[in-house]
Image (tube, rainbow, N blue to C red):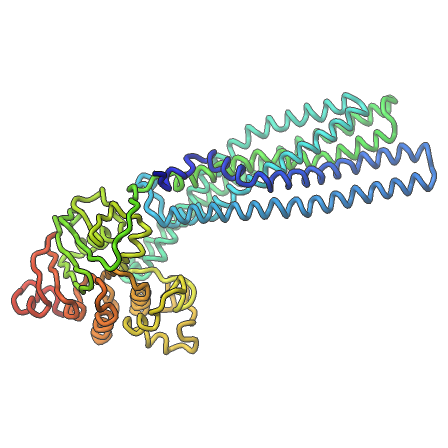
Length: 566
């Protein structure tokens, strides 16, 4: 069996090779067109030299007309080849960057090896800046080849006029590239460090945005901002270092190119003065000396972009090459099945055992918040099956034997802090646009008052992270999304902690009604939800210590009564 992990690139060089191999056709067409562009640019000073040479011998209008026509052909070739060549390369570049963004984002949404230790903000940087810089290799290679073509044509043309001029261009180009290749390594290492620090700053921003409300609550926002300022300052210093190194690189490249152009011009002038080359060849040599600076500049910048693409590819490999925390199975759970937790030991859980039969509504009253969080994490597959003792079965089959995608379709665990995305109320409730129970979910979650407040109803715009909604509205919107998914097995964790008692009572009745004959497990301390459940399991000190209806437990269990009454 081939796992998704086996198909992932293992290093930055593998990622670059994959990008090049996947776009070989577009790169070949782009290289031909950009080669034509550079050849046309090179042909222009050559044509001028030939025109001068022939004009001195033949001053007829026919020769002038032919010269003008030749220049028009060259200009047209240069214009069209550049236009269509860059269109092909930039389209391939953009498409390839999109592919890597999707790959990185897909891996970021799945558990990766723990030793990677990347936060969501860092993964976001990898999926944007690093993906773009890696895809730049699609343009770099054709431009490198076309620039080489231009330099070779210039060298051959000058060599035909005088061998010393051609050798001067070739030797000078090799010397320039040798110097710049050494400097580009410094740029690569500095860029890699800069990208890492920028990613850490991005992760810190994401953490601050997520925890801004509680930070304000206990006055920790100033300390958090100071922490971000330190991380941001480190990123700024490294960016300045990269800019300084890049500036030195660009300045050195420009200076060396100018020295080579000046050397070619002076050598051609000396040869013309000595009568070794003609006036037309001198014009050609001077024109080529000026022109060759552009392909040389482009040619000399390519090592820098190659090193930056490689640094970005190596950072992406941190995510793409990381193995999943567990090898997923391939099975599919039976539809409408039950949920069984069999002697699970993980974190605060100590041999927890219970079963929710198909179509049953069960509540778990966890006395310790850590135990509730650990139970929800195990059921949500945030903890791999081989990382805890015991087994969790859905539809009679172990989670370890089931494909993750199949489990997600059959079993939904809705966290108490579900994310709200920029869009509309409807797109947050039904992201795929396929749910048939949006109206029932809105009613059961008591989101009806939020919908009624706005003229657009469900099409009312929502800001990122639900910034324009209250805590209770965000929680009800997340609950509506879970209910609209209409999965066979639904697990809710503390779905009503941010709403008032009256709304909580209505939500409890609505969830019980909507989920009738569907398997539902609610981890909560809400008396309303506990009362709506068919039975309640008491989770205390990591084990199930009692099981009965909510009202029977209130009458017989003093500890339960103290824990859940408000």
